[in-house]
Amino acid sequence: MDDSLGVEAAIAAEQRRAATYRLLAALYHQPGDQPDRLLDDHDPVEIDAAGLRDALPEPKPHRLDHAQLFVGPFDLTAPPYESVYVDDESRVMTDATAAVQAEYDQAGVEIALNEPADHVAAQLEFVSLLVATECEALAAGEFEAAEHYLDRQYEFLVSHLGRWVSELADNMREHADTEFYQLLADETAAFVERDGYRLADRRETLDAGDELIAVLQGDDTQ
Image 1 (cartoon, helix red, strand yellow):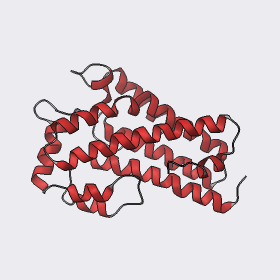
Image 2 (spheres, rainbow, N blue to C red):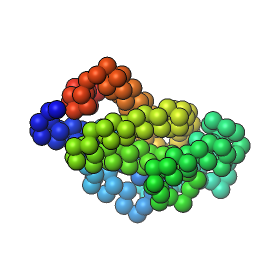
Image 3 (cartoon, helix red, strand yellow):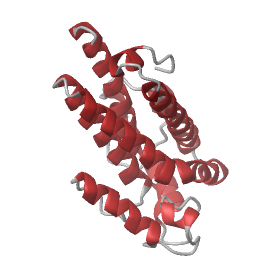
């Protein structure tokens, strides 16, 4: 197994992944009074946070665009729920919602969001928690557990988030009134797709017998 410096480098890289999912999740929440602070005060990430910061609109158009895309009260132009894309475009709280909630329950986590379990922010936050738990396992030298959480991340992207986030992004690009949400669509779809390929490559390399830390260190998509 690699030395402690190798483990520390691997953890730092995985922490960037966790922070990226966490920041993306926060950006889908209803805008607060100071959204610029969210994009100023964050850990290192793998998305263009500076570009998103520069594209932030004034508070009123920001809130209005968020509402017409994701909230209502009229028809949503970019529904942020998996169920709409994989089950029935006219409904939420379907079998897909229940399946996502079961994933959270199995992991023993509760997502603090007053929305159905299949909301994009909840799913992004869940992956960030899986990556954070992987980092804890790496720090403790529990490499088998870390591989388990890598597998769970991949399976969740394949079964849930990765199935529909590109369609959400398409709707956001088409209907957003602000550059901010158009750019957020680009950054979200690109990162989730890239991370899915990264996790698939890691699984293949681990199955070939390579050690976990070597796989994380050799990941050229970081």
